[in-house]
Length: 84
Length: 253
Image 1 (cartoon, rainbow over the protein chains, first blue to last red):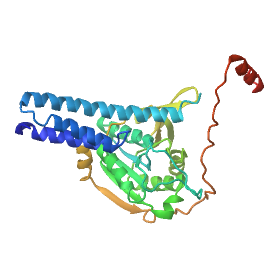
Image 2: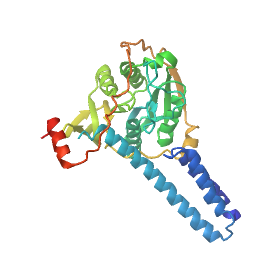
Image 3: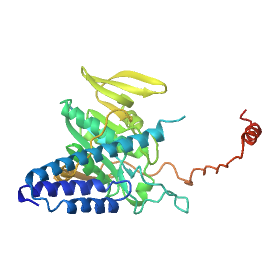
Image 4: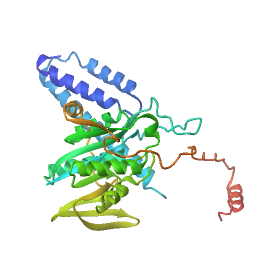
């Protein structure tokens, strides 16, 4: 990992781990997959490529947040508002 | 500028499959994931948005419950509440704590903290009581705007759109008032990790019901808690004639 992006990458990893605690199929599965992806790309030296990856990671964070919100909203709607 | 008091409850997470205790005294809570009641998240979000729109000057989150209720309060603080009050009710007392007691606590705190608006979720997803907002308003003798799906500041009061059977109702209230949040009021923000960390520095006051002079002796007794009836298994029918015959038998055609 190139040093200038070290902080950004670590932050991304921590944020994703935190989000993984609510993962529907369980935290363990999420953590393993997440670790695999980060390990796979850990040899990347090109700072530009690392930045693109971090950007993608931040996009994934937003997607997961949106997924959780929608999942909860739908569960509530189904439970309390869909009578027929 | 008004001060907003938000009530939050720690409940079993919405995604958890609820199991009834074998002795039918309640549901299994040990080792089960808990989180903030989804309707209370909507209430917190609305209060924080009021603050962002400069309608509110301060947002105070309140929770009644065991020590773990503080985690729920942290979530509220991470979402943007300024400070939190934890009214500790633990063990057997918490098991028999009812909406009336919570309403009395909220009413007392609203007076002590000089709140102008009280916002709570319309109901909690564990007991589905849907009573706290109404009783708090009654105890304070304040107007109530329940099942809010839109809240706007108008003049020196609020214009609230309420979800009612088969439509919407728009009402105006003066302040102070009690509002209860319905599902479509807003889309609550996610409490991010950095905000959870920052929330640890925000003030959290611990109190007991006794400090507030509220009697939390139970008024009702839970006799038994049971699983809903299990859906009966279906069967596969070989042809259309049998289906028609079965439907006639069941009185559907």
